[in-house]
Image (cartoon, rainbow, N blue to C red):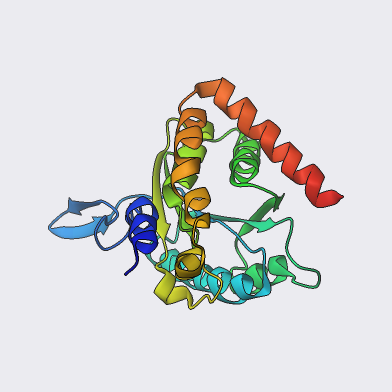
Length: 221
């Protein structure tokens, strides 16, 4: 394993809070292990290319479908990536595999996704106490930190699907061997500014939303 791959796995691969190493919590009820009530299962999307849609996104959907059997009362949500390649109908894919899932919008960034989900709950005047975010994104710690800005009182779990299960040839981790110095831009350099932004309350949230807006404008041009 190269140094770049080691950095990637230290920074990204070990932050899943719903993996075998960090399982979802259980409580005992009359001698039986019963999973805790889960209010929300959110399928996070990071499409970008046809390979990522056909591999990472599908693997994420299958994982959510399996979780639905364990948490039948949880509400399912998903977003689509606003910069998907032309002709890639991610929304149809998800709705076909997860017919009970609610689409919160076509989004350019994770902060826009979290904001859209929060807006949905504000509209129905309800607040989730436990949330599981299922993602194929390798920097899942960043995803959790961003969601905490919009759901500060929610107990948030991340299930980051191992890259080996997505069989995604364009996975960032699988490509780190060929990234050379680009590894710094994917791991170490974003670490400090994202930590500052996600731990700066409303100011950090406003800056993230402004950056998200700029990304959305760029994608529309």
